[in-house]
Length: 303
Image 1 (cartoon, rainbow, N blue to C red):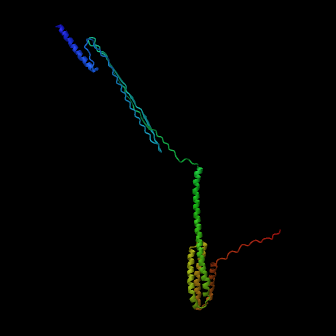
Image 2 (spheres, helix red, strand yellow):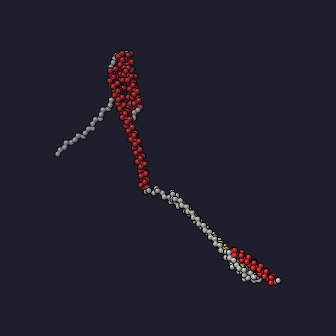
Image 3 (cartoon, rainbow, N blue to C red):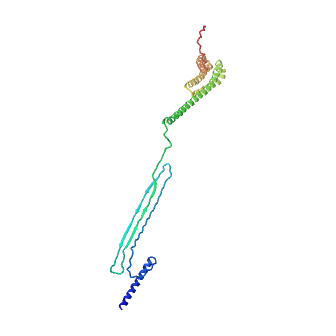
């Protein structure tokens, strides 16, 4: 009975050993462990899990150089290493049992290295070079200062020339018109008026005087307008004086004709008429040309 119990115990132990060996064989790659009465020894297991993660990112941005090129460079390096080593020795020895358990060593090493270099070129480089170089003052400034003055002188000279030309043109035009008016006045005063003044009959004088009288008044008005358009003071004074003399001549002759018609002494009024005519003749007649210069007498030459 005792032997049967021992055999049953051994069979139970063998069955348990086979079951344990079957489980271990499945985990260790499919091996089959035979039942044995020897104690089982578990070898220590070492687990090393290195994990290295490295991320490199480089960003480089470089703008083309313009009037104000800008280069930016930023270097950022981040390195993170977290080694983690865990050693957990577990050793169990059962001296009293039939199945001793060996030491189990578990080592976990985790190294994480993260390196993230971010290179961004951002170094501002400003190269502004002025194309207008420094020019010597003696060259540009002198030339720049000379031409404006030259243009100013030319402008002033042009204005003066225009004024002189216009004045000379006005003088020429006025002299031409004044010469024609003086010739017409001389024709009336020196040619048509003297025969009227020699008439002794009031009736005949009444026939020839009215046309001459109208011409004298018209000439007086024209000389007045010519005085207003005179280019200078001298010509203006001369034209005004002729206009006044012609205007005074008409009433003087009218007074003489009235005295002749009434039988009074008309000869007493003639001196006034003659004085006006003399002044008109002096102003209307062109001045005589100047005499030629006298040459100094030459002394005889004796050899």
